[in-house]
Image (cartoon, rainbow, N blue to C red; front, side, top):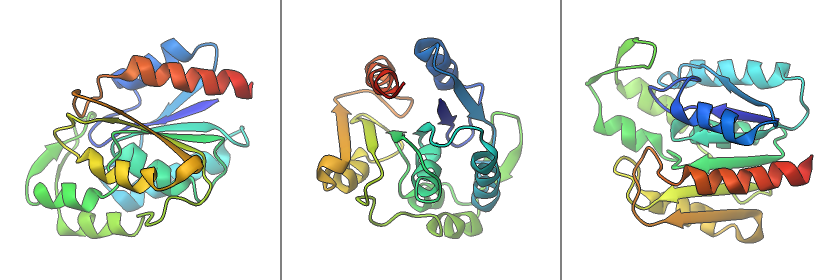
Amino acid sequence: MLVYLHGLNSSSRSFKAGFLREHLAPHPVRAIDYPAHRPEAAIATLERFFAGLDHPSPAVVGSSMGGFYGQYLARRFRFSHLYLINPALTPWAFFDEYAGQTLTTADGERYQVSREQTEQTRRYAVEQPCDGVPTTVFLDRGDEVIDHRIAERLYGECGAGARVRVWDGGDHAFQHLDEAVALIRAQLDADA
């Protein structure tokens, strides 16, 4: 089983969620809606979801803010593998850039980016990710929202505990999903 965690202002009905379901079948793919723009509520929702999941160690794919939350949750629940797509590992920098602006979620909820959100994200940071959680990081160098070098540096120092795949070009939406899904499928097939 694989669980997909969407990014900020996205949803379980995103393109990536649908792509994963289609291209990883017959492996089951679940996606959950959660308030990614409200860190404390996001963590509470995701913790309830994983605590109630009927699978002892799912694989998890987190995109952008979903990668940030996935990284945190991988230290609280057992994941067979954590996949991060253009992860927002320092979201306080992202939130600071948009402080005071009004954004809209995929479900149409409007919210204003606040200093409180920035501080809440810091509570869920993983300073040292090289602790044995099997992780693969997928990065596009052309990501216009998040500096790919942050994840590349953090996970590049993990040695055998993490794989980092970096592609030239692309963007924050991630233009190398075909290649990433092929690697995810190979791991799911091997674990089946």
